[in-house]
Image (tube, rainbow, N blue to C red; front, top):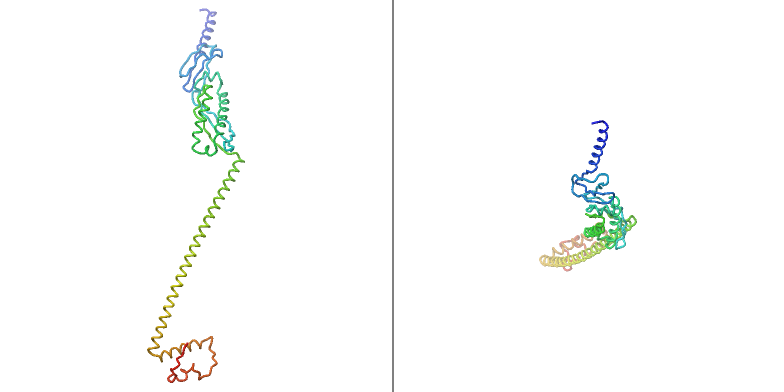
Length: 297
């Protein structure tokens, strides 16, 4: 074969190799492909493996078959009780119809932009009908399901299936937080004052009951003491009477000694009376003292 024929043959082989190489493409397990011919969709490939296309006039566009992430910007929402809330959400979606996805949004970047608007609008619409207590309670799961279903209805026209929509974080604005904290503080102070008032009232009631019981106990004790004292005085008088009846002389002498003890002491040791006074009869002559007039205290 002459050299003149080798060159064209080599060119032909090279072109055939380039055409064969450009006609083959591989779809991986995490991908799905859309074959385009001059910009027009021709077929959708969702199964992984080696595939073929017409070289030069057809090309393959690949999309993810895995779940994709969407993080919309933080949205300010006004709840039904007129409380503002800074809501940070995230969404997870999957491309289930590559042909419709290509025809409506084209790229994942455009899809994320369009879907973020839908998510934030849906969050504003649904949270605008609930109050703060519902968002912070167990009702939050039901609210998230409502948001996901509504977002999914609007996202289906893009060939997208929304797997989940969640509120990552919900915060009150700074000015609202300060107002809420102030209100919580005043509420706790009011409750503390109420508890203190109740405690003071209960203490007063207990103190009054204790004082009343103490007064009753003291009165009972005084009454019993008076009774015992009276009984003791009566017993003393009866004993003295018995003793006086048994030995009047000794009793009179004993009474005189008691009178001396009380009259002559450290405080009143000075007596101005004549020495022959009846009071000192036992000093003068204890054996001859008259018994007719017994000394009384």
